[in-house]
Image 1: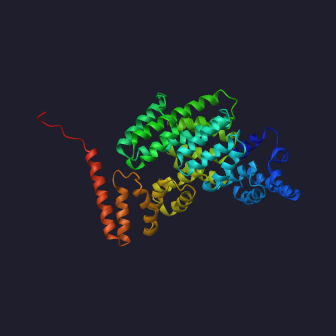
Image 2: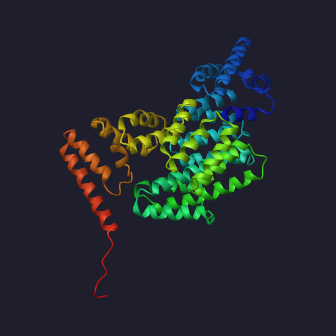
Length: 422
């Protein structure tokens, strides 16, 4: 597994976890007795073995016991934090990863995983800061560059999806994709964390210009990291994956991206992230059955692969199979509480399966927070839900908002007739 390989690399080539614990772990300072230390080492060994097998849920109880014996131990905090993150518990992982980062200020690994945890929760500015800290700590190591580039490419993709929620944003997203494909990106004009905070502050105003500027920065950073990796003696599966990500997300070349992912999975067949990426490329290429099979294969390896879940959700929602989509959406909503799109999709699915109260719980908050609804369709759905619940006044208000949004969209979409006297 990638995670296990990265931890082994952090410990040092050719050294096992327990050798490091014996030689340099902080457990000696915290264990009360030799018996406690022996117990700690045994728990860590068992937990790490389960971790290597991607049996994260089984590893967690053992690592929690070890952590109680040595709450400041670097590896106890790091491994437990990673496994909580891998089982969809990013909020619980963050304090542990922060403790690991404080315990080893020269290591980039805790910062990489902190970045992932914060990104999962939608804390993108903090995530960017964590990834950039990892780059500094690791002196632009292969691991830090790969993690940063992966985050940058993912944000480029998700921001592009958000832009396409409006007519004006769609034009910007198309322009952005063209610029990325032609490698004609202008230089970045501000720090990414600052731009993320600016975008978050303007969320309700749907600041497409800020989103466009941030996307440019992420595309530039991803391309720069990929070029740096080309000059290093890089881990080939990771390099193939990154090449595939650049081809898929920056250049829109699904066939070439799929070829890179397939090269990577030949070298690392049990990596769920690679299988998930294959599913994503297949879905974008329109091969829905292959995408479904690949996403399901990724979930067999790790049931918490979020993009694999999202692919299955998209395929089932497009087929109007809402009953099948609901369990996946519920899992995503629990594991990514900051994802408004998941909440909206869950509200839609519940509304279409006769569960108006639950649908209202998930749909109303994102709309109140300014979730894009350019054509008014979501407010119309909300109005229908409210009517079913007997809330006629609220339904009328939501319906009126749906009509206002629809009328505004139509007025922008219909071309103006030139004045005959001009």
